[in-house]
Amino acid sequence: MQLPGTLLMFIRSLKIFRSLAATVRHGDSSGSAFACMLLLVVLTTAAGGQASALPPLHLTQVTDQVFVAVGATGPPNYENAGHNNNLSIIIASTGVVVVNGGDNYQLAARLHQAIKLLTPLPVVWVINENGQGHAFLGNSYWRDQGVKIIAHGLAVDEIRKHGTQSLQQMIVRNRDKSIGTYVAEPDIAFEERYGLEVGTTRIELISFGEAHSPGDISVWLADQEVLIAGDIAFHQRLLAIFPDTNVAAWIESFDRMAALEPKIVIPGHGTPTDIATLRKYTQGYLQFLTRQIQAILDTDGGLAAAYAIDQSAYAHLDTFDELAAKNAGRLFQTMEMEAF
Image (cartoon, rainbow, N blue to C red; front, top):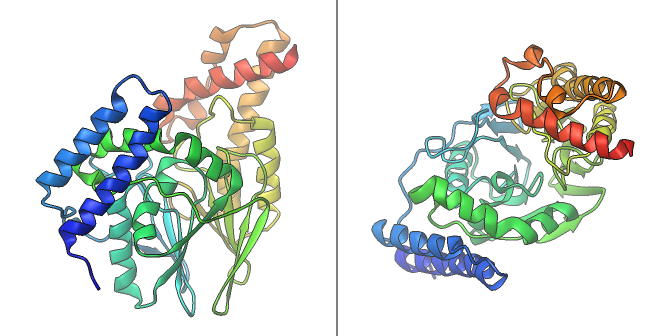
């Protein structure tokens, strides 16, 4: 029996409420969780229980089986509906595999609309490439469709620890475009490798080690020599170094990824490209910044010198203005601590 749309939205709103209420129970005294609850109630009521009528996402064909909805390479915002990362699909003989749940319920629904224009096959798996909001918040839509979700164990830990906070931030940013979204944890967690057999298609989920954020994984289609790399690789936007990013480990992880020698790589952000391009703007950038900071430390320089590093060779990349100085400062502080 199919439930009426208004009842379905009410059920989803209860799920959102439970997710946000967890923040209050765990000591959020700022009132932000409660404010988000009220916002969702208002938005859901104003929408009359219906999601906004947004168009299907545009899919770029990579191979006969692989397509990608390329997200904006700038920060997420209301205009791009949080679609600032890549959402990939693999069409196998018996079903469709989606890589990344998306930033929110409605964005995932728009991806599903696009998939239905290509094939009548059902979506049978959703893979979260890490534990960041734009990788997992759209899980809520796929959970409601009965689709199984899988991620690395560290990504699942991130979702459990910070999922409600990511949801709050997305709601404030996306407003009415956040309707229906709640935190849905993956059904399956793995550590190093996990193989999916979908009809005659073999799909391998691989962790190459620490990279951009906890639980980063890549999806390898050996028969097609296509790698959906995720956030281990960047080329059109400057990568971000987080306070807990292990840059030395990321450099080594990149080498392990590149050893597969894929012909086509779909990065976490930006258009499909090749390993040489990704090496220049990911591993090459990390190595450059490491050398520059080591030189500063060798001459007893300070944090100000790190902020002043000339990174102009990367200034054409999106998010350069937002991230370049932060990256230098964070890596300097990490390497300075390691020197003691």
